[in-house]
Image (cartoon, rainbow, N blue to C red; front, side, top):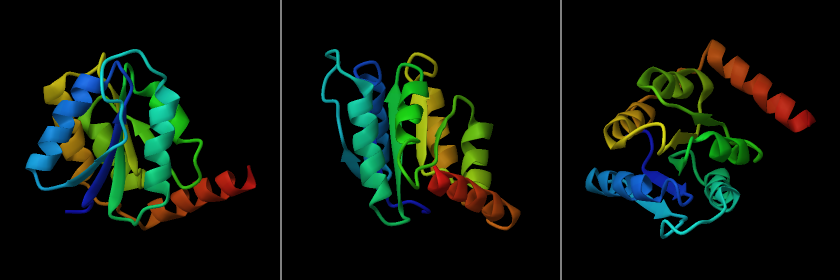
Length: 151
C-alpha cells in the first residue's frame, strides 16, 4: 500500500460519489479523513478543495487526496494553488496511473457528472496502486517545484 491515509472532499455535485468512494476505501483498510461536504445542498467547491489540499500539503508522504465535483476541473484548479500539491483531473485509468508514475501526483480529482461509480472506483484503484517511478520523472517534478517556488 503506497498510501495509507486518504483525505477526501467534494462539493454538492460530488457528494454522493464521494460517499460511495469513502465506503470503498474504508472497506479496503484505508484511513480516511472526510473534509466535507456532508450533503447535496448547494455549496462552493473551493472551500472543500482547499481543505483537502491543506491537509495533504501538511501530511506525510503516505497521504494523498481525492476530490470530487461536477467535472473535477474546478477542484483540480483549487488544489494546484497550494505549494507541493500536484492534483490531476482524470477520467480514464491510463491517466490516473500515469499521473502517479510520471508526475508523482498527490491528489486525484474527477467529476461525478463525468464518471460513474464503477469508473471512479477504477480511477481510485489505478491512482492508489501506482508508485512514482522517479528517475527522469523526478527531474521533471523538480522542474515543476522550481517553477512553483519562483512564482
